[in-house]
Length: 184
Image: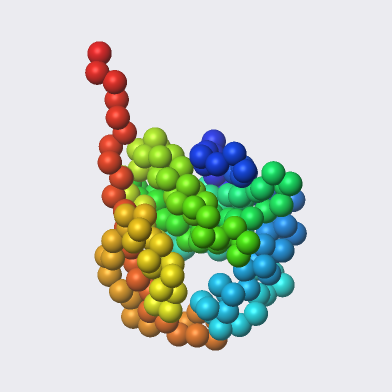
């Protein structure tokens, strides 16, 4: 996976950490606490290998060096969220968020917005021009959240399988303003 420096979130209650193999078990526990999300998207229970799949899944033509996987930890060291995706996908100036998943106990408190803001600033500092993501059609709450973060609908895919369900995906994008530079 990509070894770039990680970004920061503006919340003293949480810290961000790049995930490594020693985080497999805490990540699996997070996936299990977020079973409502898996049920909504896939119509099935969390797989016993869900955390391993997050480490390995990537689009065709991409490598682990393009992948990012961050855990969001509370002050007690418990993983409360995960952000996963790809840099330079689907093109060289775009980054893709494959998953932003938060523990039900921390949802609705502004943490998601802080993660998106910190990540957006980081992508911009890495010369990224936009961020894209997909939301399955049944996840209206996520669609509304991403719209509130400045993402707009680019297109809707044809229905495709997700576990036991078949759903369309709303592909969304947020263009990033250029980084400010100081005039001399």
